[in-house]
Length: 406
Image (cartoon, rainbow, N blue to C red; front, side, top):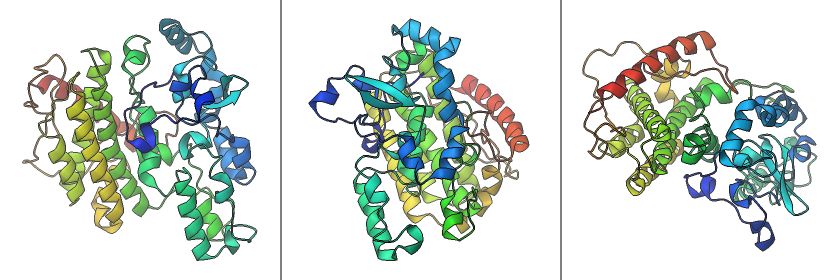
């Protein structure tokens, strides 16, 4: 199913409005892209042929044919009181690309181009305008600069704009909806969701770099320099959106406990980064979260902390120097860092039901080698053997941390 409430920054979290008619459509409040502005994947595929072929084989696309038939999905629908998953449900939020048909919102496809890059009506023609050239190969540098800026202003989330694109990923993969979990029985997020591994695995569709270099239709993995930056940004976004997840919690239930564990894990991962490389923005993130009461019914403090994490992440991306992050390569590859020895500082968060109203005062193990790797899932890739071993250690570490919280 899908998250009905997204507590992220304005670029991601504000549900769009397309005028009075669209606002009155049933279940309009659950869509995250404007259904009246969706042009569909077919329009994108007129130019991005190779990308669409990759997409059609991913769970993002195939879920359109399978999700509504799964017993787990049907059970969630029954518990939440709706009948048709593709028509009258909160699943529009994260599992489908919505369009308007008559006086209803319908699912046109699964998670598609516009789910990630924004509804295209306002920017697709700008994106396709090469200043009189047949394609990007004949476009002048100045025109390309103007075209990119114009497409951003029109609402396109470009792949090179890492923060908004990745934030959009986390706003669904963390499932920030308490009722969906506690009442519906939805999972509490994608297990082991790590930005580099998932984005560079099955869902990768990076053909532009090879095309610009004249190498044809090659689905290129991002270079290690870029993956280092993505890794840090992904771990930071995990913390930001885990905090936003706890912020919407109103009770000490399954949802709140799971989001709290996500916060703890994200803090540990950032500690590992800070222990391996000098990243002032990561130090700032750890300082922001220190002492924050990670408990239900504490929305203002948690949202403020999440906002600070987001600002620090954007600052990191604005000035990132990949060559200074080479020590993070083992983490990026899903491996352990070399033993740093004793003395790693520990950062704590409070957990619901464990002195919940007190400021964070316990300890959560947070040292190098605690990277949470990933469980298998959509987009899984990278080095599975190394990641699998790391994931097992991290799961055990998270369980131990839960018992250590005071």
